[in-house]
Length: 212
Image (cartoon, rainbow, N blue to C red):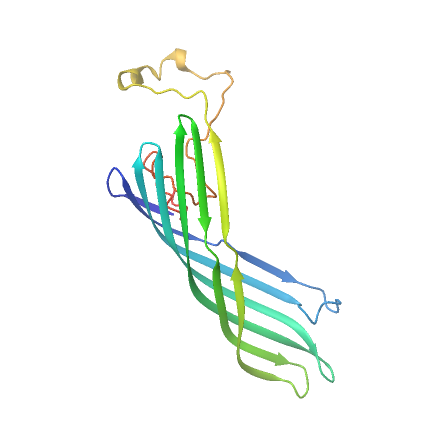
């Protein structure tokens, strides 16, 4: 993930991620072999994004999802003997994401993130082997529908203090040493589902792409 602050209120970013994926392989002879014997799915998202700091307590962001999907589906078929059927295909489709981050009260942050559904029509080759009279190698296709996701998050921060400029010179004094004192750590870079808008947070961009 990379981001670039354009000015005090606007950020641009780019995220590359793999949001969905799986790999299954079943033993030979299992009872569901006519439905599936092996499945693999790989998805890669390229998400250019933008985030805008509306004011000191509200930020919004959004991104376009350009998603590549590749899948291989295998199962057994039976004619006069048992053979295998393989569909290997890929596709590029588009979705979107949006996020909002609000701090209605000091130390209380609420984030909402939404990721749209992405529909693919995988196109590739359908190959049938080992089945006399049915062996073939033709163009094939299959539908792939990846779900939409909505996430609502709440963070309550406490024991925070604002250090004035002239006070920073004292931060390295012996009295400020942590030593064996008990420390409480608080999340200061609030994110919603990794991809929420966080443009108002220390100059970091979220914009729905995870660029934070």
